[in-house]
Length: 102
Image (cartoon, rainbow, N blue to C red; front, side, top):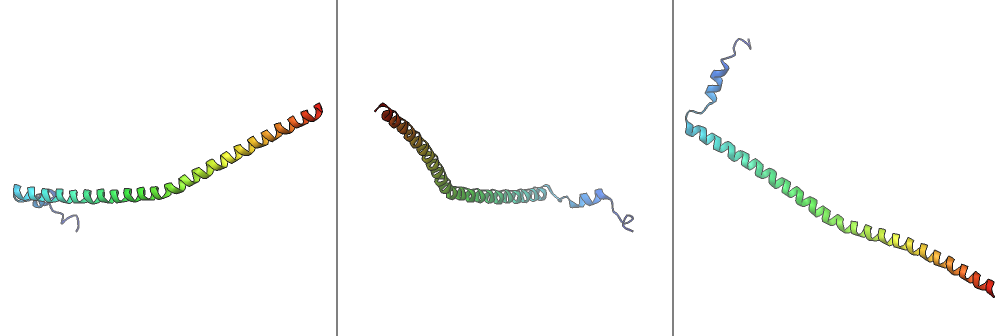
């Protein structure tokens, strides 16, 4: 059946070889051109994807900057409140000392 009808594998390989060196060289050239097109397509795809990521990053960067500014503002507000509270406490203590002196 299947195994009995198998032909010599080396004979099949020889039939696949081109007849002349020129024909072989042409087949190789076409294969290389095909590979070059594939690499060009992949390169362009990667370039477009990178460009899209850069655009997204640029758009998101503005919101990140806003978040950083808001975070710094909150931090400075907390420091201001803390300093104001400390100054108020020192002032009240000084007032008490002055009242005691009277």
